[in-house]
Image (tube, rainbow, N blue to C red; front, side, top):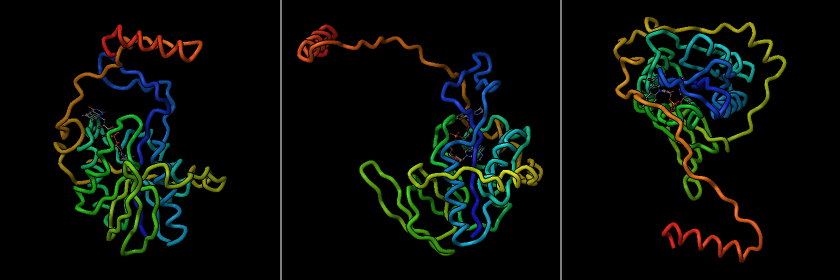
Length: 261
Ligand SMILES: Cc1cc2nc3c(=O)[nH]c(=O)nc-3n(C[C@H](O)[C@H](O)[C@H](O)COP(=O)(O)OP(=O)(O)OC[C@H]3O[C@@H](n4cnc5c(N)ncnc54)[C@H](O)[C@@H]3O)c2cc1C
């Protein structure tokens, strides 16, 4: 089974700072990591390959340093890695990102399954996977928490819904986005680390993908970030102390004072 896993390198912190002039993330001094949800996607792909055979290819669109994320994925068991990197790809919104990755998937052509994380911890939209499925015209199962059965022809998977889960069956090829309930990612093995150091990372540019430059990066993005800001905290929290009855009375007084009771 040939599996493609899409991964994104993200800042390894939730305390991201925004450059007020450029409205972009300040990345200097912040270690980049593989988007946590994508580590579950890698693990699931490696587990399927261990049972069914085949190949796991990891794919990322990003700057040259995203090479590190791909090497880490190889240390975790992926077989091959492709970096989509070109100055023209910069400034992509989710649509242009999905369009570029979709072009790479079409170039790979022989695949049975694509696995993405359910969302990233920086952009956080959860749009790239579903957009890719639409562009590739293949079935999509989001929020997958368990693969119950898989063969070269079909997959049966559980997807999380608000009050439980539902089980869906789909022909392959299909695209899944996975949640963290699906597995526990392994740590890299010593053999994997050694392999990742010497692994060849294939780099594809705009010219390699053969797509129009007006469809990628900032030019291909119909959404633009015009302002990014950290909300100013205007409310103060107060912890009521002491006897529970007195706390309830105090709370009711506060609510009355605020016109809420
Ligand atoms: C309205 C809007 C405007 C934006 N404008 C800009 C901009 O001007 N400049 C800028 O730098 N960024 C911009 N971004 C951010 C950029 O579009 C996103 O970081 C990128 O498109 C991925 O979206 P996401 O992080 O929400 O991924 P999600 O959709 O949350 O990711 C889901 C999954 O898709 C896969 N995936 C996501 N991104 C990649 C990738 N790069 N390579 C491989 N797999 C991937 C992963 O499996 C991931 O778990 C913008 C975002 C939005 C919503």
